[in-house]
Length: 274
Image 1 (spheres, rainbow, N blue to C red):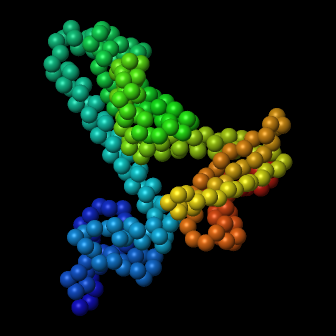
Image 2: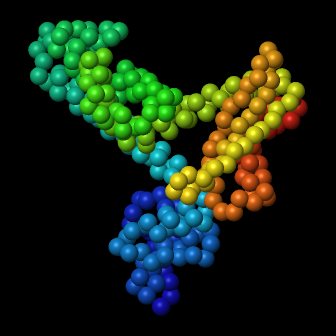
Image 3: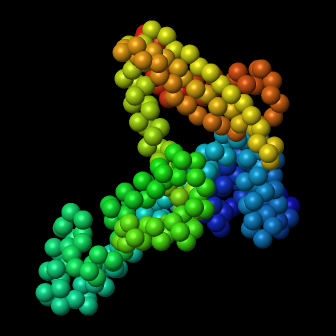
């Protein structure tokens, strides 16, 4: 029986890289970038995701990045809905006098009016809650603390005394949501710094390091070094990427070249990217 292409019944981002083909009453996911195909078992796409991860790392990175952005957008939308529902509930059960007090509370710098308001939790989308989230993320990252710290009773009791209105998010929220946001913000700031300082720099150099973790996963890092206009030595870690396969000079060289050509940075009359 001839194969027939169809439209996937799932919205998984993996279908951007595979075709859904029906052949002999079986649904098959066929890779768009190589001849490999997978028989779908009850609609599971795990085999196709593993194929992208092992055979097409750059495409897998694109898939993860797209999925993360979609998840963030859904979380932001849910937070906005939650905040709107909380405000509507307050308005429905408030007297006219209490509504005026609530409006004044929302407009105050610290949002603390009476004793009850002082212990009412911030909404997830509240600017003050988001600030506390990022400060906690910086604290965890800068101190190399485990994410499990925020789930401990002692840390939550400390935060309850320090600022009762703050919602302490879970360890998984910081690891999967807050840290990527902090990384994106720091990377954008680094790019701006390099764009400003490298234009007047007479020379730059790169160093790299490679190591293998206990679970046998290898990583490759790259660091830039230069002396700025004030004759200060500057060095920044540009990236740390997984490195799969043999550690040959040719493969390492190509991986480093790929990292150096990602973001445009002007240096003298030349254009580097990283």
